Length: 335
Image (cartoon, rainbow, N blue to C red; front, side):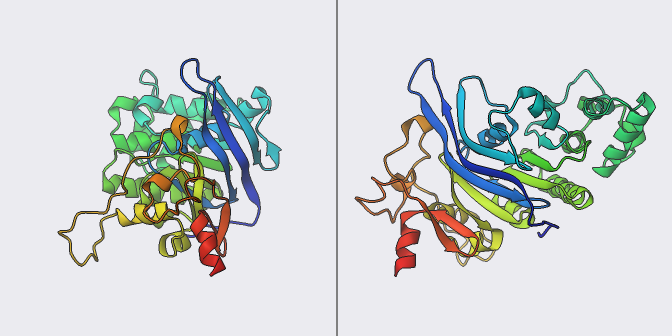
């Protein structure tokens, strides 16, 4: 799905590393030399297994990492460096220019306040010139925008009176209340049935078209990425190992890990539907126990001994605006 993106870089992350100091056990890098960028109006899908560092990356962008995390590299938002920025400056950005749609709507919403009051609070934090009636009217408009029927009544409901899909829509309404430049959606369709998933993605699409905001969509669902994002970044063991346009990455896959992820998806056009789905052997290593060389080499069927197990691969160009962190991509280009 193509959105009205421009050439203006909204977010640029360069060589981001997140190092955790542990009281017990070994200190470790959870994210290592990660780079990605998002243009204004663009949708970037970030995909990978649980534990690959997707949500941690979003927390680093928002400046919401725990106290024992040490961050290095650069995160520039509209040219402003966020790493090392004052907390007061970050608070000014959060919710107004940078917004997050949390993964679990039930725990993200306060059960003792109405949905309307929580949306109004999200607005008034950054604009305290509105009256109560104006805030309520804005909350009703936002609930209508995200597709909640009878918003004039629903605005006075509590979260437990909403279904799972409606709670997720209410969270989206809170996140876009101030029309942010960048929305980070962290697994926004998790635990929702397929029909509601499609509705939530349609809501995000309509909001992007209306506000020209950019979207960083974190998910483990490749189908969601294929139908929604402009570009995709595949994460593994705390790094982006392949990035490019959705069609390029899905149809001209360069990294063996991405190939394995795509191969594990059920296909309607499969010749023999009784065959079991492909499964990538082994497990993703914990950040504290990364192997030498390429992090994926113990699970890779085409790893080259003496190279993949000893040298950390650099990023190679796999095609126009398509890169992969893999020794074999360079070997293929050389032939």
